[in-house]
Image (cartoon, rainbow, N blue to C red; front, side, top):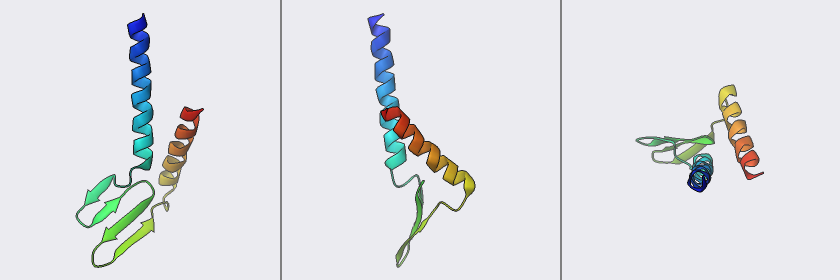
Amino acid sequence: MLLLLLGIIVLHVTVLVLLFVSTIVSQWLVNGEHTADLWQNCTSGTVFHCLASSTNEWLQSVQAMMILSVIFSVL
């Protein structure tokens, strides 16, 4: 029973770490000179240029759910 409880605790801590990393990391998709993540899209040609990626409704809902999941997991 103690081993099962220890396994559950390790699993929960691992999920929390992965949640924080996936929310904070700044390069989800890298394609040559173009990088994209949950918060912004950047191009790095002769001039490094970043635009906010929150123009789509589905992306705004994903951003909101990620922030809410971090808040609720801390509580």
